[in-house]
Image (cartoon, rainbow, N blue to C red):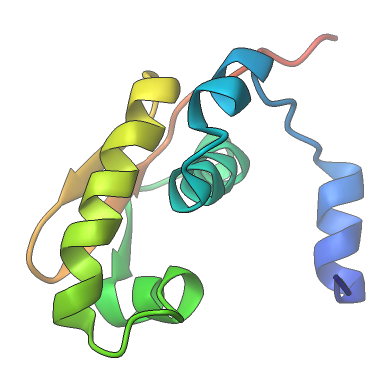
Length: 111
């Protein structure tokens, strides 16, 4: 895997520890694990509700699906498992997008 410099710097400067129990819970569900890590990294940094369109989600998570209509139900199912592992996460789901809301990270930052 090759990370671009901007993303690498963001990860280095703003790490988000993940719950080992959540990783164990999702270990056999790769899309759910990907969503969990994505939510853990994004949600605590949001200032405002942020909609993410289905085409954008499909581009990021659905490369194995030809059409968005095939991808949506699988993503929704994987999202449900990710949310079970990250109960602080707040997401609204509708036909046009999912909306991310600010939430605490899975593990509180140690000062």
